[in-house]
Image (cartoon, rainbow, N blue to C red; front, side, top):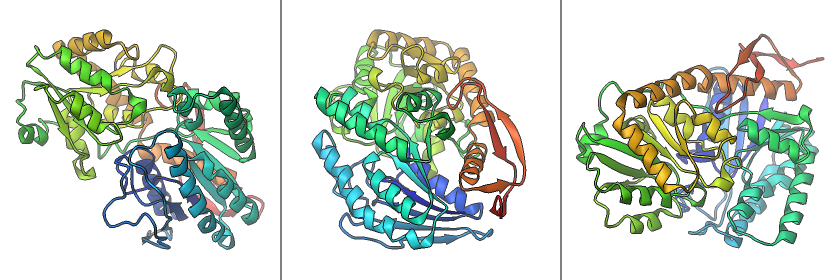
Length: 449
C-alpha cells in the first residue's frame, strides 16, 4: 500500500506521539509498504527545535530508507512556530502554524495517489489538509486520536468560555464525521468517539504498544544506580516522561517532601517539558530527589529498570481523555506501578492488579500507596510480573501493529491472505474485544481486482 502519514510529532522525538508514529512508519515500511510522512521538525517534549533541524525551512526528503521487501519511508519536514510555554492561545498558534505550512506539502502528494491518508491527533486542526488531500487523491481518510485535545484544553482550564467550547466541540464533531475511519488508543476513548457521533463501522481500537524484546526486566541492578550513587538497597520511585500540565506532577514533589524521613526511598524524575523548571524549583531543597534529563533511546531499558516503583500521576479530568503512553514501557519493565485514577476509568482498569491506584490529587493516599509498595518487596515483584506478562501477551509491538495493518488493508480494499482471532482481557488496550488480524502479507492488489 501507499500510506501518507500526517502528524505534528515524529521520530526522533523520544516520547509520546513522536515515538509511536516513528515506530509505526518504520514497521510499515519494513513490511513492504510505501510510506511518506509529513511532519514538523522534532521539538517535543522540550518545546525547542532539536539540533540539526530548522523551524523555518521545508525539508523535502530528509531521509529515505528501503526495506528488503520493497517498502520505503520518506519524511517531509514543514516549518512550525514553537512557544516555550504552549498554553492557551500560544498552543493554538503553535498547532495552526504547522497546519498551514503542511497543507501545501500534503496536496503535493495527490499525484502519488496514496491508498490511505493517516492523520494523528493532536493536532485536529490539521484535519482540513488531510481531508482535502484524501478527497483529491480518492484516498481513505483515517484519523487516529492519541488524546482528546479539545476536551483536555477545556478540562485543564486553558479556555473557560462555554460558548467557545460549544462551538469548538461542534466543529470537532463535524470533522470526525468526514473521516472514513477514526481510531483511538483505549476502550474508553473509543466509547467517547461514539459520544461524538462516530458510527460503529468507522470506529477502530488501535492501542499503543511496546517492543518487549527491547524493554524487559533486568537480571541485575541498572547501571544507572551506580552512576547516580544509589545503593542496591535503596527503593527507587521513578517518574520518566514528559513534564506537562496533564500529569499533575506537583503530587510527586509533595509526596517526596512527606517522605523525607524515609532515607531508604529515593525519588528520580526524568524527562523534560513545560513544567520541568517549576518542578526543579519546588524540589530544590529536597535531598531525596534526583532529576535526570531525557535519556537516549539506547538507555531506555536501563532507565526503566532503575525503578523499583514506577510513578504515574494523572489529573482527574484527563484520566479518560489522555491514556498515558508511558504505561506500556512500565509494564514491560516488570516493575510495579503506582498511579492516580478514579474507579471506572481506563487507567484505573489498566493498573489494577499490576500496581496500586489512588485517587487523583490525594497526596496522603499516594504516599500511603508508595509506602506499601516500598515495604513489601513480594507485592512489588508479583505486580511487576503481572504487568510484564500482560505486556508480552497483549501489548507486544508486532501483534498490535499486525492488527492495525489488517485494518489498514481492509480500509484500503486489500484482501489479507490469512487471519486469526486475537482475544485480550480487560486492560490497557481492550476490554475482551476480538480482533481479526493478519498472519502474513496481504495479496498484492485490491479485493475485486
